[in-house]
Image 1 (cartoon, rainbow, N blue to C red):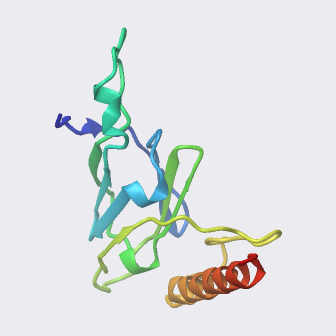
Image 2: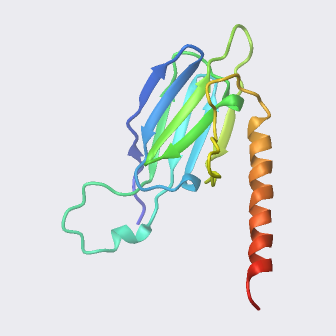
Amino acid sequence: MSTQAQKIPVRVYDAKKQIILAAPLPGLEPENISVTLTGNKVSIQGEERGPGQHRRDVIMDEWTIGPYYREVTLPQPVNGNLTNATYGNGVLVLSMPKQSGIAVASGASFRLHPVDAMHGERIGHTGTDIHPQAEVKHDKKHQEESAAKRRSRRGDSPR
């Protein structure tokens, strides 16, 4: 059964150097969420999760777990390449650096993915200067850690 996308409510904040957007997407996993940034437009899409939710003997049906969709026009262009996205407790938060001066706004399109933080490790932007290579370095570190965990499990498992 195909379900029409639900409109996502949002809160948009104007911070000194960023525009912050918060949107509730209850019931989704990070990999179910896609974001596209182009100039001063943000599109958020959440895939439907658990199609079995429609095949039950439902007594009352006031919400479903996706699909979700929302396009928001921001008050000014943002730098999509330096945008930070976090998703926790069912809320997506985008921290989008404002595009400064006459520079051309950069677009970006990405799908969230879960990240396992190690004890004491902060993942994401901490409010200091944003570095364009941070995401690439983080992804490489995450891949290396995942590979090390898989090797460790294979070596420790009894045969």
